[in-house]
Length: 493
Image (cartoon, rainbow, N blue to C red; front, side, top):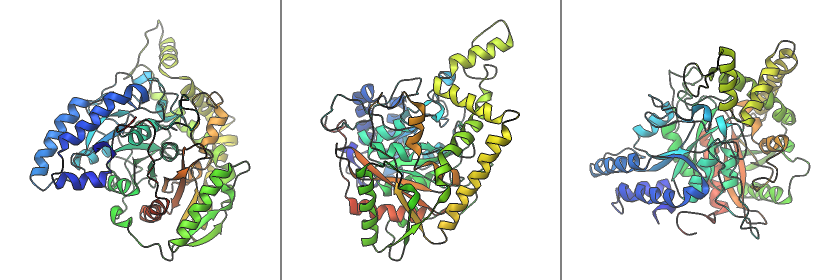
């Protein structure tokens, strides 16, 4: 069952000649053909290019000097520009945009031999928490609730297409982007691992911007080790990106096997929010016990400004999105709707090109940046953001990593809360603070809810200390023994 393999296992199997890259990629292309019509995880499928790349990978593998990801089929979130392949940001505004260049992150993956099987669906311009705002249709989570097999569940957002593709066996791994939790929350909902690196660890060059001071690319895969392998390729300094940080890379795969003896794990008291479901609290407590058994010291810590994280995020992120999306005006590239005057052309282009959620956030952002409100909202939000970061800095003087829940609930059905934007924003309550502070953070599955849906825990680390996050995550993964697979998958239903 080639679509059930991990990246690490496929790497070894390819080199032992147990199967070819053509067979491995072909199995995933076939799975996409069978299931994508239902899951809608991919906006653009690149089957022919993938199969041709797989043949080239087999030639490399025959020479015994193939890069680490040679022949590994990956999905690419449709926010990363890919040379000669349509890149839409899940928006009508960029419906027919074909970039003449490659993003740095995807170029790094290609350099290391990865095979791209398609561009994964997302919330439009990465704005959403359920992957229901895409102009190309909703994504369905491959998991089903016990006792409710007809309900289509959300995969989380904005990287919901990437999460669903990996969980269902349509790709062995996928790229995601995380602005306020858009890698970690869908990873939790779909029962996979998702890692948001430190802000500046992975280049943003060639990635369509949402909020420039928050956006960060990261890997999504079935295991912590697979995320480590992908991160090793994706990360690195990029002089083309002014926010890229020239900081040495660690051996991330080796970090997974590091001893946790003496590691101090912080438990932030502010993450025990009122009304948290008992099953979320229980999974968190299990995680604490597993890390204690692995040799960690458990330390209670406080992040007092956490309660302001979500409100601050929904000022800063829309403000930056308002500025970034001003370029989509119908003049230079993307959709253009003709009109008698320039002003009318702007209005019609943006009205037809942007969906409801994107327009809402542009309007919020424009408001908080406007004269008379800049100081009251945006400037104050930036000051609170500094306090949130200071909380983390002070906590990491006492501990090495933090352990929290990833999301306040398991995946919910499409339509249950998705018509209330405020309730949708609350899905990111546990993930936003780490994004505001630029810290590395990872979600991994540790168990199932009462209705047999995956539950995730989040590990947060010091800046550029992804290795500690991976080490703790690998230990949690071993202790949890999470091997459950969703109802809808390439091998099976």
